[in-house]
Amino acid sequence: MYVFKFFAICIIITDTKIKKALNTNLGSVNVQPASVDFYNVYRIAEKIIRANNLDYINWRIAIRKSADEFNAATSSANFIYINTALYDSLYTNSDALAFIIGHEMGHQILGHEQRTAEMNTRLKKLREFSGSSVDGLTTTVLKKKYLAELRNMEYNADALGAELMTRAGFDMEKGMEALTFMSALPNVKTLSDDHPMTDKRIESIMENRSTFPIEWINEGKYNIINSNVLDVKKSSDRVSIVISKNAAAHNYYKPENAEAMLKRIAYTSYRNRNMENAVKYFEKLGGKNYVNYLYISYANEYLYKQTHKDKYLNEAKNAIEKAQSLAPADKYVQEQVNALQQAG
Image (cartoon, rainbow, N blue to C red; front, side, top):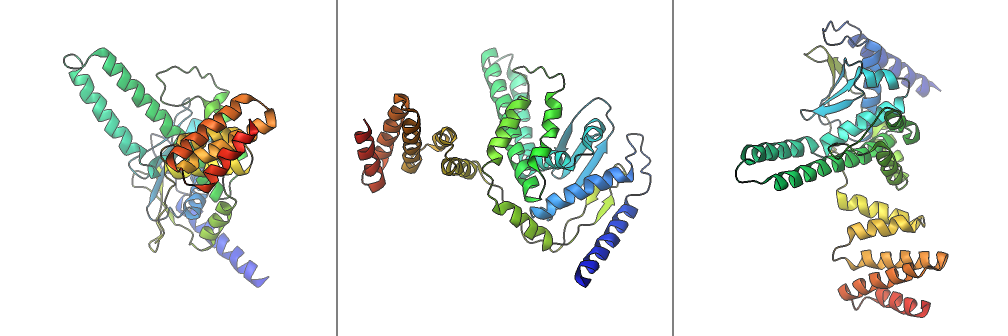
């Protein structure tokens, strides 16, 4: 009882200190966010930072005036800004704001800003020489590849943002309001867009979320319990805040690489008997690892037994042939070859 009261008093003191730090009118011609707005964003971001061991750097967050642009973005390695049109639309949904902040942090963690800068430099140089040594078709092809990579970055930032907010204890289902709101807006997409269709993003996120290990939530709680509340102050620009790093931080965030993510989704899909997904992701892994083809064969065999459709049996046989060519002496491969021979 006394321990609970002690922690409650500490929280009240900390909240009072932080609110006081944010309570002064920022006096900007750009935007004058109320202290409560910055405090709301601070509490969400600070929880994500501590849950995911992201407290080894300062994070800067701004709320920028824009009545009609529903957007957020990130730049300069640790800077996130949220437009007022987005914030005012979602401020009552902490989970949606957590997804937005997690998504932008994901871009930084994955190095997308640097990669985008590199691609922009290449395109700029290409345009300078397009009138002479580079034909129009080559320019068009490279631009399409550039836009495709930008869209992939959005999918990856979505996936990592979902992971970050989940570890921090936010609800991904409620967080999807950030995207469902966008899908309700006039939203005509063309091949020139650098963001995927909103419904495709939602589908990808929820598919990935279904494979999140339950341990992630407990790991996030552990990280929060074993870390200190992070201080916040107004930035020198007076229109943003700085969430200060933990001087004693020694754990650095290590994001999943693409292969690790695909493996997690593939194996979890297989364990959950979502075999269509399992096949899709093991095929993406492919390569020279015979185990991937063995599981493709297992999954297609399961689908064949469920549906009695010959296409699944044929796919199972094709996959096990690839596995056998890579690992002819493996006993599990041989067992699957024998099982499929008996199946038909």
